[in-house]
Image (cartoon, rainbow, N blue to C red):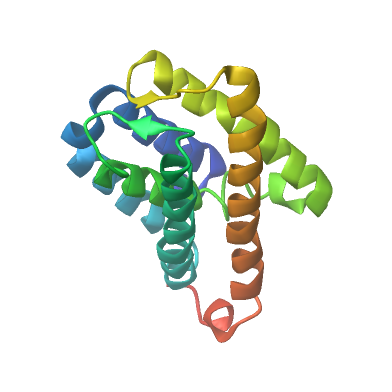
Length: 174
């Protein structure tokens, strides 16, 4: 289905998953998983993007775990990081080779600054809905969490670039 391969569809699916996580957290887990499967179905190279989603989401969850352990953030009703957050990371990583592909052509320093500036507002917004609690003032949280997030997401982007140089990228479209 050509509509699934379009970057706008990919972005809309991610936003739907993000809002489901924001409003319903664990209660939306099945809907979020279904959205991720639809996102994966829209990729030309499903194997490569599946590997990227699994490894990238593990890196993403490491970011979250570091943020929780350093008390930058805490998730409501969870001692560490909730399962729905892992699914949200899978959805985000599934935008890399689709909706975010143009952004990722930027040079490393610019890309790091974009991530540093753009990631924290999402968490600050989630804090307004009591999904996450942030115990530090925003002007401390933003640069600290932004730096952590930008380095972690840059690792995911770098892993994606490595994947595209492997045999996995050379396999016929599936």
